[in-house]
Image (cartoon, rainbow, N blue to C red):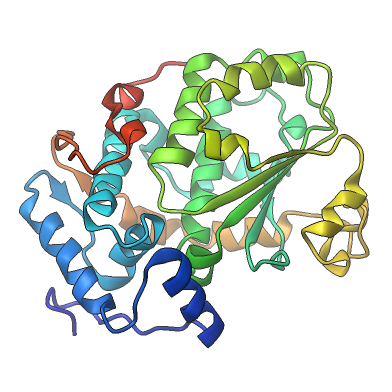
Length: 309
């Protein structure tokens, strides 16, 4: 048992992933327990925090910040501050609440990983009917999807990519993406979520894409911009990143026609799980003053004030 009484972490990584974690994330097996305990003590000293302190939960934040205790702690604080400041997005957040988004086929995950072991989110915003539900429901769906993916430690090491198919995306969709909404999304991805986002692949970019991208890009870090790929209608370029037999037929591969039903069914079984997670968070929303060691972008507390779209 760990010092907090929860089960100790049991490594399920392959030898290859253990080596990768050590080389890329500074995760040393012989120091792992010590590092987790150091972060746990930082969390326990912060009276405003009421969160899980089990090994598995803390480890995802350490990995996201390459085992830098202070940056991992700041990520925890920023993550839960974001949830408090945008409470309307997280109140009652469970898969059943966004079933309509999943049924529309907007968000899903490929069953197989890409060539580098990363999970692949398929995002098709053109399937969204703005007349039926708001853009916040899409944010909520994607947050649940990412939250589920990051529970897997192989994904914590290898990361996540997104394939964004913009077929059918037009002005009725684009006019809903305001600068405040763009800042909210990019703030989550870049500064408030314990995951390694390794790339976004855009396909079928419409004429309005330039307008929308100009709004979103201003909130992107240079590292994020460097990981963007624009393919137009050239789905065959996915073969560079994903084995052809795993790419759906309608995305230019040899796999079965894409559907998000498997992912939807998996998420819809997890209402109780997400209900349990929802009880954790910041007691009063007070964000601890960032340390000098923290990334400059993480110090922009103003980025997480309540955003109305």
